[in-house]
Length: 123
Image (cartoon, rainbow, N blue to C red; front, side, top):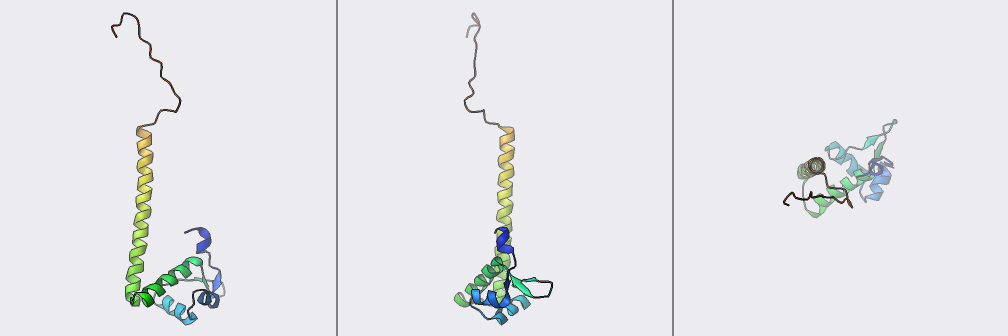
């Protein structure tokens, strides 16, 4: 997710139109703790593209798969945990690669080694 997707830009009426739901549905999701829109200085709810993606996921789970809101909460929490663990795995992979490179530096490309053998060394 990039920075722009987290930027709160849509008022509740616009957000509701974009995702084809009633504004009251968004308020209900917020009451249930499934959604946390940003609040402006005037206390207006502002939604980001990431918030809208989350609502689309909630709608898909409830309307297409028949999951109740308590189930949606569990699923979203599990997905969040999986994302965090995947990020941690990627970080550990990067650290491991960095450590491996530090322990076994690759020779520079194009470097030629010159080996001289002394006469009479028996080699």
